[in-house]
Image 1 (cartoon, rainbow, N blue to C red):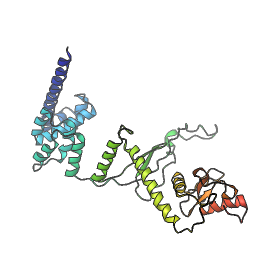
Image 2: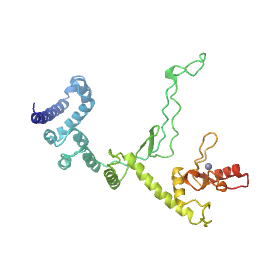
Image 3: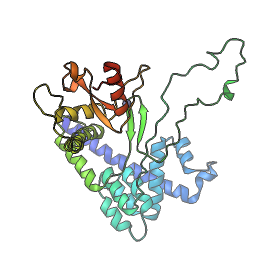
Image 4: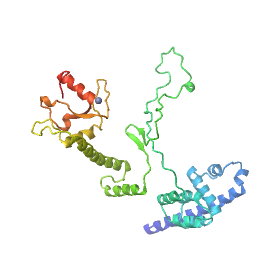
Length: 328
Ligand SMILES: [Zn+2]
């Protein structure tokens, strides 16, 4: 078999497969019309296709949907045969066809990709925005065999009587957008405008060298990094100005704006004090810039020596270092 012949042959076989599929769909439509699957002992076409015709779930579903659409609009069979529609696009568009719109819609779906047909369907049948939601899922923990931690004499409840692990998250006050999926993996879901989607695609194109698969999560991260830089600049500029200059001579306690910005972003705009038990404060209000090694003993205003503190913790650490009346 020469290369040329091989290519011709796969083309021919694909066309034949389409023809056979279209014929099967036409026949399935007739079987359902006559209710023959009921007579064969099945209450659904789906089960009949699965068990008697040995189709996969996906294949059964697609063919049945196409058969139902084609019964109402036979032109679908022609379009499937010529390859201008496929089972996926018929499945997307089938339910939205009416006597009034089918010519127009099928023409619009002709030779379109799945995504394009999805957009077409979204125009025909707009869906409400995805509700924004942030939900903290229980951490996945290794399952301990029931009773393994109980003393041998303790009565062990039958496994079926065990309550589900008590790790249900507290009900969120309102729907939010981020779902942790696994450690360090979160599902973020939201609805954007066509314009925003266009921006994402443009960013994907421009970042193709750095993010070859166009991963939206990686792009989202870059966008937020830039946004945070900008927000930090504005926020810190706003709080910086009213402050009277205390002099910027070498060795002054003035913290350069750039250091503040970096510290603020690094610490996530939250008090970075960590208690003895390892708990981080996380307070977001009334933050101050704190010298880890105090300015008074030569601590410098560098990113590595400055951290965010809430008022309480800034004072707390100053008192530890200088005593109750000192200051950092
Ligand atoms: Zn604090």
